[in-house]
Length: 472
Ligand code: GLY
Ligand code: MN
Ligand code: MN
Image 1 (cartoon, rainbow, N blue to C red):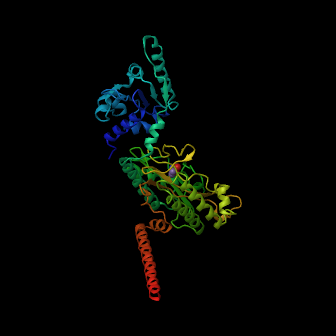
Image 2 (cartoon, rainbow, N blue to C red; image 1 turned 135 degrees about the vertical axis):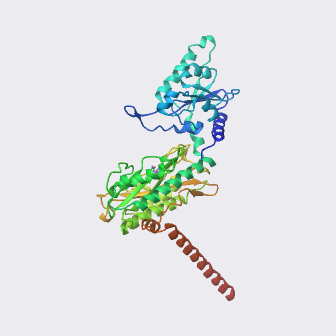
Image 3 (cartoon, rainbow, N blue to C red; image 1 turned 180 degrees about the vertical axis):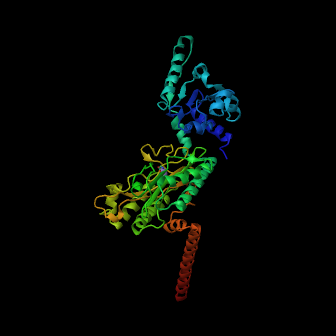
């Protein structure tokens, strides 16, 4: 399952419409990054480049020249080369760039110095993102200066430079049907991995052994981690970006795992926090239930028309009230929220955009105002509480409790859809799953009981109404 070539073409057309004729867009692919002698880190295409081309090879440059007859999308890339392909792997080549990736024309990357100045000439505006690839910035300046130096023979260099990423990032913020499908896949596999981790977790295992369960589940679905997995037991759960994952898991501790899969470039981002031995202690349960309540309050604020910060406000209000009730904070909740006292135990924000990047692109504010949520946006909702040992004025029973609960949420026409809703997060569901029971049964029984309660309440109301009518 892939994003179809027609969708990449649609994105490029949309971008070219916004740019207007008289302009040119230039975007280089990501640079490979060296790990040590002769070894590179696994290559990951630049997300903007991937979004517009679907082309995942290095040493490539995308050029869009709107309004040009026949040839508006040009891809510079590596040529086919049997020797190089024997050593380093397959290449699409110039033909592949056109046939598989929809380029109107393709040229060898080595010829770019000869061809690009001609494409720049007589274009008024250059859409290009400066400062991301300094080597390429210099190339571009070189090509522009080359045209300048021929000014007396009538050459006309472009005189307006506009950042390209802003336009692309606004487009990326709104996910298409195909992108949402991809994100559902990434979420599905990540949920499966989290379930597997809960089933495999035992006191005495090491954090890296649990991390391995994620890697196994991701890779067997041809996915990879969308970011380094955070697998933190006990005090490590209180380190927000803990990625060492080297410590043993102790009986009686919590384990916080923040891990997501990436499918065809699209990320999922999920956190669950569960007890290493399968049962939450009363103190762990109290903190967990509070974070869960805050997460639900935040999710209930995800709907079109609400602004970006509404879920965060709901989360901090719920967390602050709860912390006062538990004795972690003292004072009036409204004052504590105003003074941001919650930051002592909740020091991050409640979410971020999610997409090709785990912390995806797109502005959070427009003209200094929080942006309104709109259908097609995807965000995470991930409140937490972190109480490291030694926290001043805090009873020892709360020490080393770190909890975060994170789900991926799509804004729909009428509200929202939690893309990761199938993964257990209620205390009894998690405990059931860890005890080898069917957690979905717990969920089903609870649903049935809730329905019964509603029916009983409805019946009571009807009887009361009848009595009132009789009396009247
Ligand atoms: N996994 C990174 C985050 O939750 O933002
Ligand atoms: Mn996360
Ligand atoms: Mn996140």
